[in-house]
Length: 177
Image 1: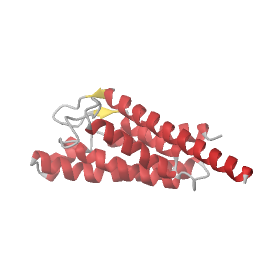
Image 2: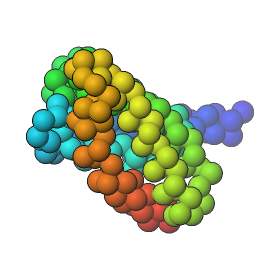
Image 3: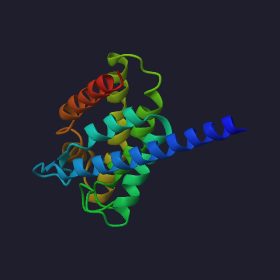
Image 4: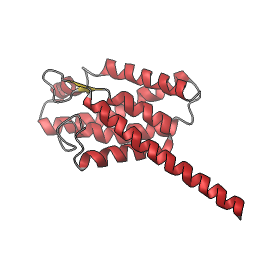
């Protein structure tokens, strides 16, 4: 009985620690949104969020990656000043929706990726999960043509996002050693 109690306590402590870490990661993603570079002609700024999101999701894994995005969206929704755009419902809101899907992809795949190349591929493949809802939302919010939507919300970001995905993959690879 005492062994089971200690085991349950260790599991609870571990879950609380990981939940705390997911909250800390949500704050890291939030702070990375504050490092932004405006793109002329676009309501979408370049930020470090992609790196922070992919790195944290890879380190947290599974459900805690989703919990991290839940914390991030909840804190931003109640007024914490860190969404890169105007609000969750602004022109950039779709990218935030994409964060949920991308963090799930990276978080769930992180336990199955045993090497840098596989992890890097997963992280790069998670980028469309951010872009698709982001572009759909941007198109609706701005009433732009698809050509202009791609110019505002994807083309200026692809190369940097691939580099951020590679850097996040490398950071997780090093961090998990």
